[in-house]
Amino acid sequence: MTQFMEKLQNIDRRILFVLIFLAMAYPLVKPFTLPMAITQEVMSLYDFIEKLGPNDIVIVAPDYSPAYAPTVGGACEAIFVHLMRRGAKVVFASFERDGPMMAENVIASATPAGKKYGVDYVNMGFRAGGEGAVASALQDFPTAFPKDFQGTPVKDLPIVQNLKSAKDISLGILFSTGGYAGGGWVRQLVQPYGKPFAACVTGMMGPAHIPYYQAKQLIGLVVDMKGGAEYETLIKRPSGSLAGMGAQTLAQLLIVLYMIIANVTYFTLKKERVRTR
Amino acid sequence: MRREVPAIVLAFVGLVMIAETFLNIPAVASLSRDIKNWGIIIGGFALALGSANLARFHAVRIARKNKEWYNSVALLASMAVFALAGVTIGPKAASYSFYYNNFLAPMNTTLQGMTVFFVGSAAYRAFTVRNSEAAILLLTALIVILSSIPLGEQLWSQIPVISKWIQDVPNLSGQRGIIITSAVGSMAIGLRVLLGLERAHFGGE
Image (tube, rainbow over all chains, first blue to last red; front, side, top):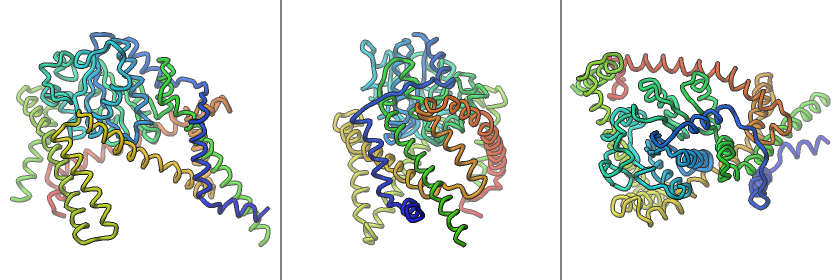
């Protein structure tokens, strides 16, 4: 028994890697979904967007890189589709360098039929400067973004004709994986202009945004792939996030199993060492 | 003068920003708006400066034939190709999108995806309960991990409830403390910078 436990404790980590790989690869071969409850944070964002209409302009900031596209990209697509269904005008404005390409990917894969670029949605590109650029854009949008990602001047884009500052928007949504994140937008959008704001962040950042949600400075909070999967469930459009939940479920279960095995072997061997002393 | 001029500029810009927040003076608001717009231009220059520094660093590595210098060649070549493509054909061109979506994005995603293997290995090797604090941490981690997957609520219906309590009570208290403390610290640092007492970024002590 002791020998077995020692072997188990010192197991070659390549075996651990292979098991993780198999756990994540299995759902690709045999996809499965599990029912999930919708959290209050996601539901409140859904309910808010349900009240929006054709007169509402929403600024969406896809501030994530391709590395995090599986994590928050699914939520970005789902929320974009929901906004399009409500008839709201979506203005993609990025403050991270990969944002415009992420916006292009969302537009390419999720734009519903009948929606027109420059009228119903637009990709304004990227502005450097972090929170300072956010502050500038929200104060004077046409000066911060004089052209869109394709180089079209704002005067030729009907969707942004009435967008001069944050006072003209109905909602701001940030998709972020780090940096100033939700706190920065609370400082630059919620506090000065009193406009509603929602954030979609990674699992690591979720707990740090709970205080803003509890203080009602965030009207919604979508965390990680599970939050995206909840949103896809709400809008009845299964896509990347729901598909990824199978792999995430098995991988997380395996990590929980690893922690349990590690502690069982640790305590068994510790007890054995005390006994043989 | 090397330190005094930047300190005066910093103090002036800071005072304009503070005045714009608390006072309703159109001239101050207009000046503040201009300064924020200049910030975007400076941000762009910072990106260029960062790229130039990166190029210089790796060029030196190549010139000195440091260890694995060929990786620096690959980095500089990729940087040049993407920069030229972005400037000449533009990021909307099909070829640029092809390179971005079929080279950069998968490599980016792969690097990020590799972390799960190391997290799993670390969970196996390092996450043992050696004291009571570690036990609390482990139990909390197990509950939060299980609540992040749909199977958690299938295993035990109370897992999401306990996880929500962890997020809304102990986590909320700790995070609020961190937010308030960092805000007070930021104010102190800001005041020191505005008064010219903080000289590290001027190259001083």
